[in-house]
Length: 263
Image (cartoon, rainbow, N blue to C red; front, side, top):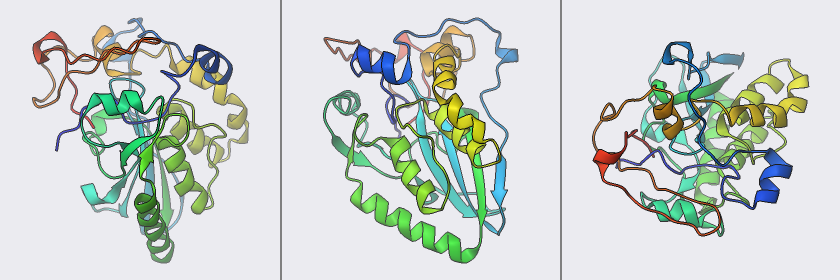
């Protein structure tokens, strides 16, 4: 099933303006292009910690709005399959589920979403190597977490919070807030677990900086010239248009906007 890169994660994009200002400072408008495509690198080099023949890789990726945070796991040297992906997202392909999830909890999916295994959409990653015993124990925990994570909510339990639970089970530190961009969440997690404790104090400033990043979301990427109309694979619906206050959602014809494959 193709899932559009429109909805899958946390952020305070549709929360109250006060929450936006006090907690994260996220912007409500799409960033304009300030740099060329050649100067933009949307993929972060993998930082690895731990040892063993198995791994858990925490990832963030692009989407039409603020992105998605998830974890990929498997044996080193073997390509992961869809069953080796876990992340929390609104259930199905209906954009209205994503919009509703900014106000009330909505039913969730907890597995693979379209784009998770494509490097071109990855914005940050952090890989942890573990032994077979540690791997089996953590996978069992992930399956239990998937079974009991039946709803998605931006405010109450989002994809950052889901990933943070996995990190904590593994004995890792996670960012102090889950109301931040996925890229900032994973990048901060990588830093605080790899000898950069000062990164914990940079969470808010890095989140504010990310709001002006021209590769932050699909629409901003189009504005920056990183994606061109009709350049993405077919089968992805157009993103919804959302406004603060009176929420309006509309699916425009595919020909009216560039498209990204996604969740």
